[in-house]
Length: 452
Image 1 (spheres, rainbow, N blue to C red):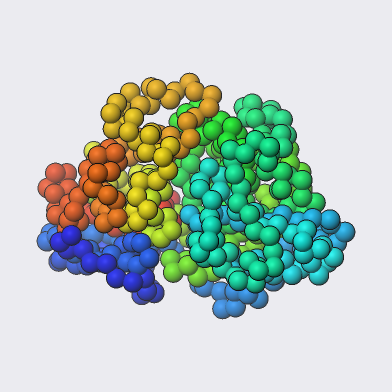
Image 2 (cartoon, rainbow, N blue to C red):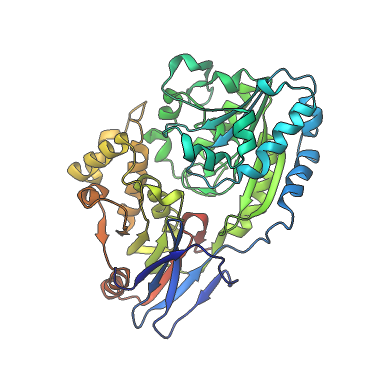
């Protein structure tokens, strides 16, 4: 752990989008767990620190939420939408997303009940996809409002419960079987909530993605997470046009009918910087248009070494989620270069299904693993994350720094595990012959690109 020191999360000083710190040994900080990790860079290093273009935090987040509900995109205000409705289902993302649910769940519930929907007819449904349920203290942290937990029915989606889903048929374009949680599909008023941030395969998170995979049956999820979707060159971050996952999600929304969404954007310190509400596709796109220029950062060159993070808690709780931070900076990693990622992995590797996929990768190697999944109609659960890990492995060398991953699981990462970030950066500089190092403190929340 030489040259690395963890400290609590704190507000960062304002800095340029990219800043060059060449000329001497310097410290940089990476998001790590619930805090930050100080890293001393080796002598001779010429670092470029890459951050989002800052969006100013909202002075009154609560008022901004109410204003968004009153002035939606492509739909009437929420109060008008809720009149005459018999039931409401509100989707929220699971614990893997730092969504400020405590800011907007109660206003949503209060507005729909004020419009005449009985409180007992309101359900908050955790869109877990194929992740584990969020329970107990974790559920309380996720919901973020004791009043909501006390007064509203809050439940978890279970993608493996066949009886809990309703079939809508198959998509016309790619034949994906569509089956969604009945609590959402049958609700009279359907509302999704979530963060809009870059997503390494679906382009952007939030909106339609909270529905599928969020509350989809496992066959739906496993179909559009199969290799024929994942290996498509358009299935990448910040790309919606032509992205096969996005196009399937849009078709699923059309099959479902009327849906509305609340989309939020937070900064590096998890402060609300933008919120929008309205028809789910139009309002999501409007928020994407706001955030895209902030998170997609041109840097003009490639680097022999990229030092990044998995964005800290909650995204770096598992190695499964860490893979996202390996994929998003590939545009600025020189071919054959070294990508070094810091991730606490406080909950270890991830699900048993992901562990099984990683065991296959470690045993067979990248080429044989990819060959084994090509042509499948249904992907094995969570093997798509292992498939995404192949992208940085094909591009260069991948190294992981983690204080939470058990030592016996290191081999299952199929990457090089390092204990000293300073030494790792120095070794990469020597190996590549390039002193220039890209430092991305907040990992997959920032998308560095060579061009504009």
